[in-house]
Length: 172
Length: 236
Image (cartoon, rainbow over all chains, first blue to last red; front, side, top):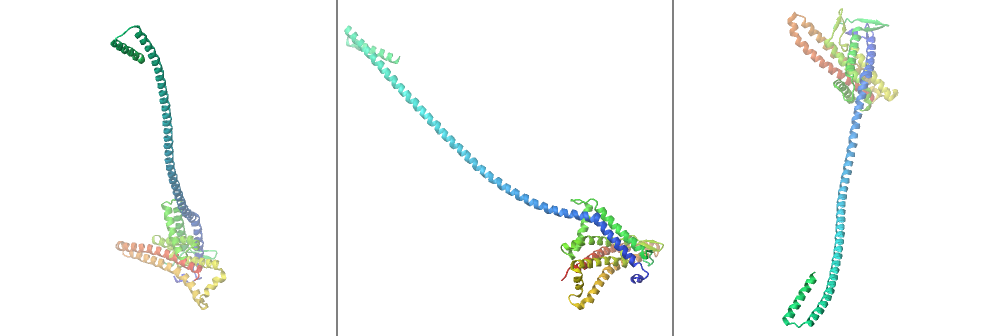
């Protein structure tokens, strides 16, 4: 062993040094090329991807929250809009109903008035007819009375019969 | 644990075949491990990728505790490879020791002080390089006479002791473990089948403990490497 530690004596110092230096450097280069480089690159890529993913998730979450807010707002708006629509529709319906009812009232009034007028007219016509008839009858009764003397009873029954006739005429 | 290592001379430089081969084996094992674990790199990691990422996070944590912030990113890869290499090196000798013609070929590379010194040297060179790179050569040299000038020799010695302790701690732990392993092994063979069976549990216990020591030492080496580098990068 002492032989080793005496540098430059009958030893293989320099050769071994060189051999290890060169083989170590070659090993480092090979490991770097075949294993270290790709794996290190992948590890860096992975850490970058994780960071990206986290950021992406954050931004997505924010976006989703904003969207939810928007939806809620829109929902609220649509609800009030619906209420408005319904109330407008109700109002419209009410108005329409009132208009229809009013029109009906007017119509009914007109019809009633016309009927009243018609009835009045009919009554007047009838009265005129009756008047004429009564005149005629009175004339004929008078003529009959004049033609023959009648008892009070006969007279009464005669008048009754004429009146009956008259009323039968009127109902005709 | 004999001293009779096969030596090869190439271009006037001598190579210890055992150290080089077992170091190469450790490097190849580390590469096969991470290569196999990183075949399917996906955004959603599978079992293999999870395991690899767990190891990377572990060594990254070592670096972060010494050099916090973005500055440490430079050393993540270095710490990762250094940790795995030393860990595998520590474990190789526990289950694989090949001897040819009485000369060991494969053993724990870190059971040799030369190897651990080479590894510590890499750390030290890196720490000085990044120190100079960050503060410039004048400021870097100036740090040796801070807070007062007469501390210069102490600061220089500190650099040296850092290097020595870093390398020899690792070497001592693994070397001692292997020696004890070999001693227990030779005890098993001393009186035939009886001792073989009797000693086997002891061998297993020591092997398990050595696995533990090897892991701890790999962790300590990586941690201290980062601490020494951070000393060069941070000023009080």
